[in-house]
Amino acid sequence: MDGLLFDIAEASIHDGPGLRITVFLKGCPLRCRWCHSPEGQSAEAETLVFPGGTRLAGEYWSPQKLAEYLLDKSDLLDGVTFSGGEPLLQADFLLEVLDITKNALHSIIDTSGFGPYDKLKAVSERAESLHFGLKVLNEEKAKFWTGQSSSLILDNIRRLDKECATPYCFRLPLIPAVTDSEENLTAIAELAKELKNLTSIDFLPYNPMTGGKYAACGRTYEPLFNELASPLLDIKAFQAICPVKASILD
Ligand code: SF4
Image 1 (cartoon, rainbow, N blue to C red):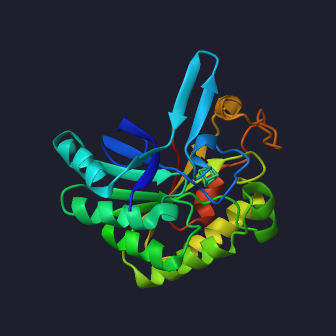
Image 2 (spheres, rainbow, N blue to C red):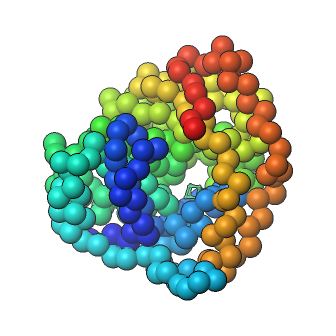
């Protein structure tokens, strides 16, 4: 089964340890209001229209072609991160790639956790670690801010933690008064206390350039939160209630 990719970042230093290549798989069931990859949401190829020209977002690759591409670069890399969009939406393609690159490339899956549990478990068993892009834990608020309830994500994380030994971290975008509200941070710290394979929690500062690509997709960026507000997160106070290492990434 071929996979639809919308980008490949050749020299990433933000998507895991060392120098990595990041593969972006197209299509996502969530609609986060702060999404900085709107071209990754649709599961169809699309043409982005910029003032200076156009760019196709979406190209089909066979698992063999992508695996060979990655293995060719393995001597220069510390690993590969599969991101999106939501990689679980193309789990069968991803599993084929992982089966070929296993033992040759350190692999990280960057997922929201929203997808079929059996697929999440299967890709987790073939990867060295996962990044869960956790957002809003309250079910109703999650529906408003991300377009989906958080219940499937939380069920998947809890079950995976019991059934699979692969370590993982949480990565949260810092959305002022949304992801870093006292209610959400308390819920995340309580969740962390239940989990044995959670290694750390990383907060990612909001990128004020996020809205830039929406016009290219023919859409309007409507975040509905105050983009100029300072984050509420007090990392020391959060660390005091959180059982794993917490930090704000650059
Ligand atoms: S999960 Fe990621 S790719 Fe999907 S809508 Fe949210 S921010 Fe965008």
